[in-house]
Figure (cartoon, rainbow, N blue to C red):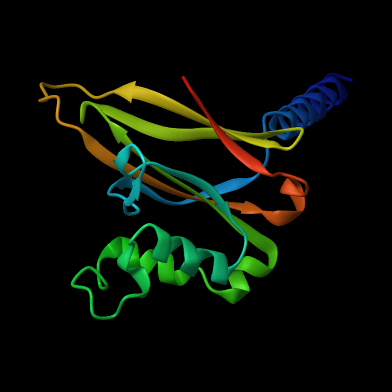
Length: 169
């Protein structure tokens, strides 16, 4: 009898864990996270470095790189062989068959804070990227740094999504 109660308890805990994980957001994988930028472009307000977009094909990726002066596909660039450029080129036709890529590049005012993607949620036609910040221990100068996230997501769960939004906590 005691064994049956333990078994039932374990089954209940597993079910809670499974259903809890499913309701907390959608599957994603961070392909790259760290200091670095995606590029820059001129706007009416001046030069901008902040990118937040959803890329669904290799051609969209190449067009975005051209628009933002990203050297990933420019063989003559000295940054062509950088870690970020190599990572971007890993996203090929096969990747985009079933997945899409969220690109987020932004400034952070302090290297004493680290960022991480905690979850993704779809609300209507919006894909919400939840970003959490945590403080590092130590003394840091307030120097603006650029952070880049390449977030992989399955296309099947973002059908109908037309925009990406950041929710910072």
